[in-house]
Image (tube, rainbow, N blue to C red; front, top):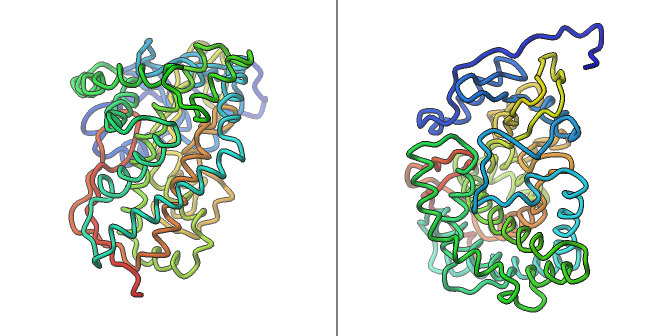
Length: 403
């Protein structure tokens, strides 16, 4: 271990915090934020893992995959909900897998997706607002309806059974955590989707030209194995729905809570992309990631022992006051040059982030053109989930632009 002589190295402060208790899960910003203010690295005694809590230290760790490896993490056990491919790989395996994903999400495919997303976003909103102001649930009636239409269509999935993807995604983001009644319920609920996902990721179910078909074509070309092609497609299924639907609903909640920011965006629609980045900084869809320390190291002046299992706390880093001015405020014109970690960072940046961004910004742009006001008409409800963060109910009134 090499440590600069001027750097004071301390042992990680010990915390009895249970990040997976129902109390914590009902206020993750408050509780995870409190751990962030203890130290950049905190040892969580109850479950024997280290939490990296602050933006700068998480970013530094994610740059160094040779020290902070993705091949293991706290609570990991083989699961039909979470294939190892991509998420539990380091180079060179990860390089090949991610290269396959980036190929199917190339410029040509994204252009086609963007045109389709735009048409469907506009169709949905025009239908919703046809009779004037509409009282809707931004999760069920807007986010889910939109995402469970456009992304399965892009993947070439059948209409029947699509709703199972929400159960599958909800289970996916409760795998990495300790056994509990909550986890048991989530996994049992998601189990009904496993056969559907298995069936619809098989080679013979892929329609020509679709994302899955393209992945299997790469297998035929020897770029990945057939097993890897199916595992990548499962990963896309796992990550492509739950977090996107939750984050779009969270974005609507942010605007409903901050009407002046909605008006600011309407007056300057060029801020749409920036507004989305601010929304996922403010309400990240993924609460944490996982790593293992390959060797003893020092991060932020705190010693991390060899073999330590680690959680990288994305959600708390999004409101780190060392990185963001007034981090608990939502501003569509925030200078986002300082970035956020809501899609990860480094080689393990979420491979599907380009699609999630395209889906969300396309919908938001259509909303800006059509909606004058967004108002809460009920109490929003945050989802209770180990790893994913979002809202599964956001009752709002959408008032259309006068025409």
